[in-house]
Image 1 (cartoon, rainbow, N blue to C red):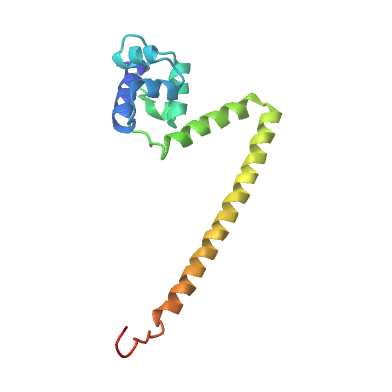
Image 2 (cartoon, rainbow, N blue to C red; image 1 turned 90 degrees about the horizontal axis):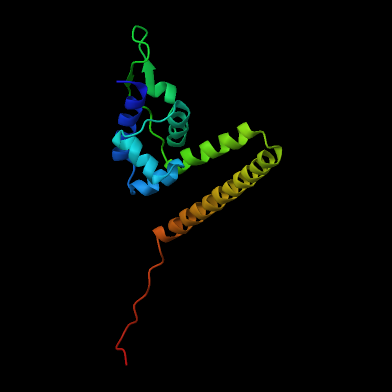
Amino acid sequence: MDNKEYFRTFLVRWMAENWMENQSAFAEFLGISRHRLSNILNGYKGTSEEARIAICNRLGVDYRTLIQTDSGNAGKGQVITPPQPVDLRLASMQANLLAIYKSGDATKISAIETNLSSLRATIQMEKRARKKVALSLMEEEESLVDPPAIEKPRGKLA
């Protein structure tokens, strides 16, 4: 089995175990056409090594780790179970950020850094607000531990 077939086997297994949506959505996530994905999954057409690497990057998987070469069998490898990304959106964002970083576009990189700084500040403010709410609730709960006794009216009610 060559690397293309190992990759196809991995992709079929990965999609079955991790993807909950349809094949069209998976193709869109990978950045390829539905027809091309179908051809890859069914073994009708192979993929270039560059395409396999790009797909692995979108899935958050290192292609070199996926296809291990045995020293005695050049071109032969074995499929190993790679670490799965915690969140596919995170893997997608990581791939996009890496592509922008590799492009060297200083304007885009600066915009990303600015937005990340703003996001960090927002997260810190939210953490502080949640902490204040939690402390407030704890204080409120402490005051309700021994609530004052409510006196019942005596006598007949009219």
